[in-house]
Amino acid sequence: MYAKSQLSFDMENESYETDAPKQILATIQRKVVDCINRANQFFGTEFELPNANLRQKGRAAGTAHLHKNEVRFNSYMYQQNPQDFLETVVPHEVAHIIVFQIYGNDVRPHGKEWQAVMHKVYGLPPQRTHSFDVPPPKQSYYYQCHCQTHTFTKQRHTRAQKGTEYICKLCGTKLHFVDDLSKRH
Ligand SMILES: [Zn+2]
Ligand SMILES: [Zn+2]
Image (cartoon, rainbow, N blue to C red; front, side, top):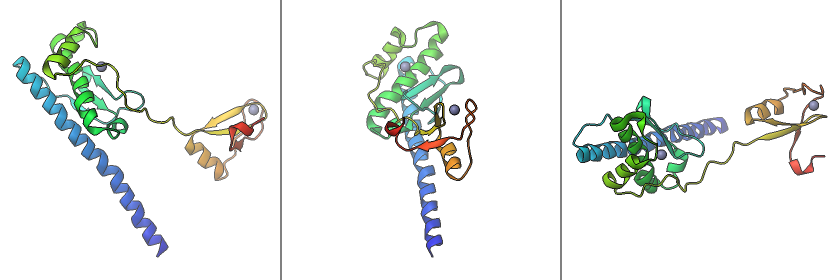
């Protein structure tokens, strides 16, 4: 009984994990199409639609990969404020794509051409920075030998807790987990 309910809980969890990004990506893709359509109307041309994905991690809200005609978005930041993200980050990155398709490599990334697309096509201030929170740093686990402190990833920490022993290459002594760094001496 316990095992069965545990299993169904995990499956629910999994479907949540896989469906949400799909919906986010679909919403972002619609906005990318909308941004390209507006640029098509403005310039009286047909820009090539970039591929959009959610591969952006870290401090950037999005990046434009010009030679791949690809725009990457940070779903961690999207979820903080979807409306703001769609209205500012998506046009920002698509504007890079537009500028590249018109001018190629010869212009500065946030130069007057990009600013003009932001301002005239999208009616937006050409902002270069966003105000979304950046993801917290990956959890680290600290281990101590006789000579230094070692930083473990979660995976390595799990292996150590399950019995795998780690030896310091420098001093040759066993590493021990330190719960609280402030207690270290
Ligand atoms: Zn930019
Ligand atoms: Zn050591």
